[in-house]
Image (cartoon, rainbow, N blue to C red; front, side, top):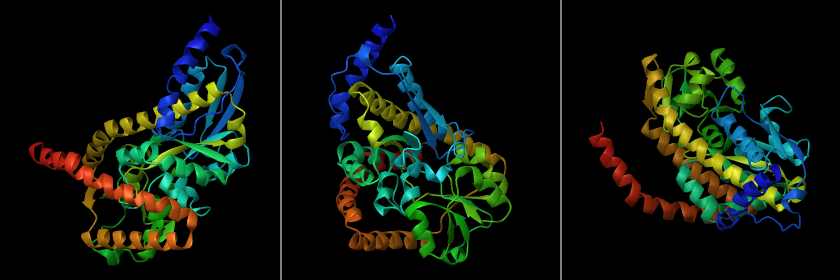
Length: 370
């Protein structure tokens, strides 16, 4: 009975193979193993997240749960919170060095290793969640990111997206661009680089450390994700002013990282199942955040949080700075340029389309729904 169930689950998973290849994901190498010959495997997955965040840590749990279910327990992966095996910002290193077989993280934590890794997650004034998925699965993005990760003996698959994020928590309100000078803020990735150019003292902290740093005054401002997660971390208790939009993360993807040597040893069935599980986690997380964030925002506002839009001069300065930084990096780094130029063309094209099919509708509905 277990053999028959495994054959069925494997057939379902393998049925998605053509879709995964069409989505730009690396096709799994062929293997002669039959379902009855599939090995029992036990992997570990390190993450950058605390377990208290059921949404973002939940992305890792979704992958692990589905892999176990689709293999009838023959292939199990155990997820670990940040700090249980390695610190939250060392997931890539742990996977690269085969300390563990896989990890769940945000690629922009590692732009110091290669700035092109930022594209796998989010770029300032970049792609929305749906645009990011379109680029990764059907616009050549995933193939480009695979080339970047291959230098680290890693293969990656999108396994979560938070949707457009908020612009962070501030202890004092921002009146103009001048108020950023000397501000100490937790913000990672290229968004942090832009803020640094605007005079901010940038710090990168894992999620579990943000509240204490903000509450005790080690930092003056911090961004994480959005209302649901931010309230769980207690950021509203440490700062009053909540800004939008999160221009540095309009649709950040989270990655399943797999040690490439471990990946290549897997039977084809297991490779396909892993890819299917990652794709399911990608969809589930985005849907969950969209469902939870509005109610969480209402709760925050009722509790005294003050919602504020970024001043126009900050947005304009950030946009100009982001464009200059990306152009400069492309001129110095061939790997970055190889991703940046087609990404930029894709952003221009899909933005033009979305102005017609989505923006016009959203603008109309914002008027009639208010």
